[in-house]
Length: 215
Image (cartoon, rainbow, N blue to C red):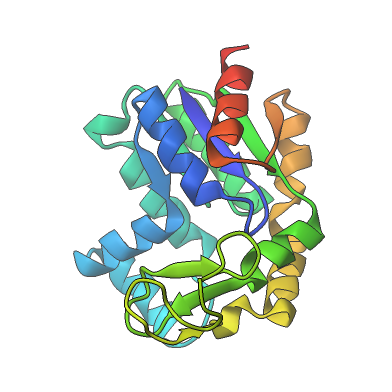
């Protein structure tokens, strides 16, 4: 299957992508992984992307599209893939359609993880990270530490990352609404959109998504 996963920040895309890709036996292709791989391997696209990133600029669509195209042409993606973070706007969605059409392929579904904006803010702004080990993550509501402000695992101080503040989260949501949300209507017009409520346990959301894909 060839699937695109969309949804606002905090909807759980990364978590769901990993589970869905495993269940479907297809590679999970995320934009973050594409950038990291190309930059670490010093590919031409990676070097071009790094120059923009080092200057604090957005990486142009053509570079992101090129990285995605190269990745989708790898042997493990011949029988399908799950795209996470790409396409991020209508121009990229149109480019993806053209790439697939040229290769005689098409998307099977676009999964839209739906979650209310206030819930997104609550999820992200409530995260607390251990200063000693960033792998130790807590949440003031959903996974609170035994002692406020103290890591259960190592006793380190818990803090809120700057990009997890409510103001920053709402700015990220505004960017999502402006740039990425229009692809939902783009794919709805093609009859590919499947909306999945993203509230509840991770396993329940995965089950909903798998049942929707099977239909």
